[in-house]
Image 1 (cartoon, rainbow over the protein chains, first blue to last red):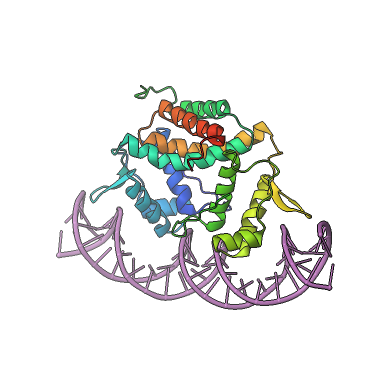
Image 2 (cartoon, rainbow over the protein chains, first blue to last red):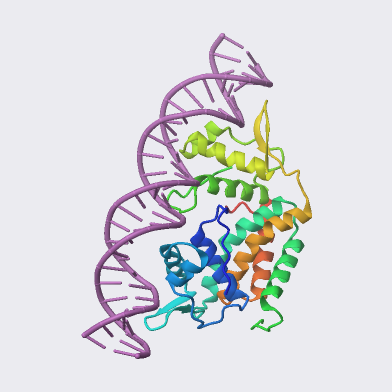
Length: 131
Length: 131
DNA sequence: CCACCTGTTATATCTATGTTATAACAGGTG
DNA sequence: CACCTGTTATAACATAGATATAACAGGTGG
């Protein structure tokens, strides 16, 4: 999977890395169990330091998106699926975004449409356990 | 409006300040044209430095949520309402959140419900003073 | 056993950012 | 005139982000 870092961004490199990997999982460009490049290989590809990649992997491991097998290295893992906990984790960030959206004059309908559209892009036609 | 800063948070103080003021506008605890405390007064109330408040005000001014009148000082302003631009600004952050939500097993319906619920809290925030 | 790969840890260094502190300035109010 | 606004300019300090070099434990395949 191609990783692109914006070095002029005010967002930290390791944070951009985390976000892009999570985005990769959400859009099925990365699938469950898929092996990630080693910290040294990924660092070389992007042109950054090994420790910066390691920091991203460590965070993703703590968040439950990545696991490490001593034999294979780091790989994608989306095992943990506690719905209540997941909502709680997402809710705080969502409040910040929705507040800004509302201040900018966007209606609830605007945001529902935006969520709908983005989620469809992620699903890409693939049906999930929508109940 | 009461401002509460979490000094143990990894989020910068000026960022927390920005978010809470935007949240205040979204929930109608701050209304259009309302005067904000001066940088020195706000700094004293919270117990932080004047420049940290000034940084927050400066950012909010650049984002279009605050204007400055030489006579009165800083006040809330929600004049700018370009829908296309607003959506574009919100969309990037929304993609990051929705990616994480999807990875955690949350469905589109889950997120639509969450948006619906939070937006209702904002709209009804005039009456419910439970916060 | 050996070379080579994994993640991990330990330092040290450099830079950028966040925060504080002190001070001054221009403009507006009473 | 004293007193309030925001704004700017310094300097100082702490923390975080990123880099560099090095080493270690564990696993793989020759």
